[in-house]
Image (cartoon, rainbow, N blue to C red; front, side, top):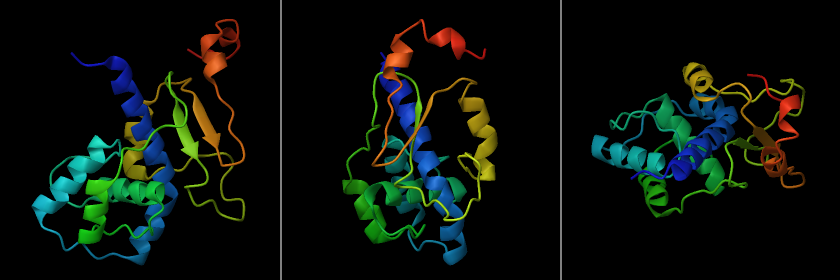
Length: 177
């Protein structure tokens, strides 16, 4: 029997990890357009492990595509590794031996964006948007319903939404359905 709560939390963690990866994807792609030198079986193993850990890796097919690169970059950022976007034997070994990332807040459906792991431009380039690559925009709009709680934080500030979720008197003012 599938534990629905764990499945939902894994799904939300996947979104969280995907969102923190996106600002660096273009940079990594521009700085290194080479294809990885791993075999298809090794790439498939990396995709499977990244997916199992909650990174959105796309199809587990052994092809190093934009979704696999995005998952790799999210992994590199989460682990504090150099953000190369390249799947090498060293990165594969790190993927195999890393622990599963954990959401900062548990117990309710939400998305987390950790600003200490995305690169944020010095000049205003966005007005509160959380950037995602175009290949994922359509899927994200299907996955996240209107009214999804999004926690945006850094190492200095974090505001939990748990009490808001648990207090039904607060919900009518924010429901958008």
